[in-house]
Length: 224
Image (cartoon, rainbow, N blue to C red; front, top):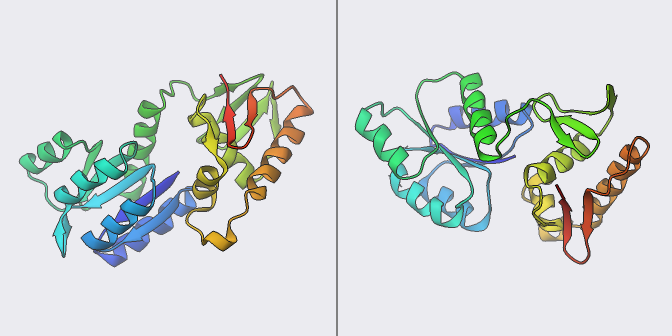
């Protein structure tokens, strides 16, 4: 999942980035209202963490802007403002959660996972995937009782497609969510094609993968 951290306290921002990267999130950082607005115009994110007390603007105003450019993202407000009216205002503006500083990083991760379960309607620990089952949190995929080894990028790609099942995702969309932001001259759609080929090769040993579809000229999707 791709996360934008908008936090002017750089020590905290770097701690958040380090912690979330260890949990397999891709992270972008912004330390001001202006930087945050620029990144929101250019990129799509799964999670946006917003500090209200930015040096050059109010986080509530940035939240309003962000909802227009990133309507599908999940929003968590991180702030030292603990007043009830601030919490209510943030939630009324469309924030998914509100976490008062100081907070424990594992609590933030738990709240992000709870949002994902609600957003993608994940009720069970193991999700069905054709004749396979996948544990997104523990990052395992099984056929019957046998665990199948996938590389980190292969698992990231497969799980992202699963979370957006029945939706066609372009090669560029998949690349941005697997590798993060990259320069145009580094982009090669063959990266995605090669990983999809490897996933099919590994899984087809156990069972057919007709649910993993190639949409010619566009990208891929998992069909339920």
